[in-house]
Image (cartoon, rainbow, N blue to C red):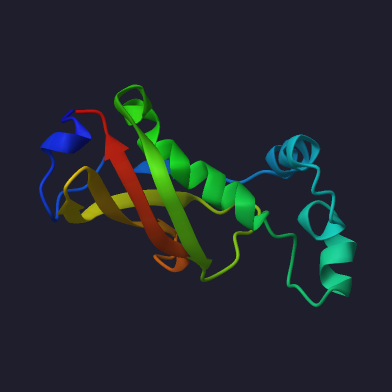
Amino acid sequence: MKNIAELTVGESLDEIQVGPVTRLSLIKYAGVSGDFNPIHTIEEEAEKAGLPAIIAHGMWTMGNLARVFTPFLGNGFIKEYSIRFRGMVFLNDVVTLKATVEKIHENTVTFTVSAINQEKKDVLKGQVVFCPSL
């Protein structure tokens, strides 16, 4: 595995797959995050809110996406992390997390990041600016 500082534009970090999403993982996330909105854990409440089913917390997906950078955190840090939610993650979804070098500027590497479900639909897109140690 290359160090982030050795990457070139267009290269990607190793993808990570998360899932299938379970109710238990969302209950655990609710406990850790303090986000107990029942649309994330109770079918009837999700349906009352006009959703087709329980949805994962958006921040659950965003937090998992940061795992792509975990192997590099001993040699740098995430300086900026910005995303847009593009779709919902449901129970039993399998989400693929990706990061591709968009640009390299002085002491930072900017990545285009995404989370894609098993139907190849974007559920999250954004950017991460990483500062590798020199």
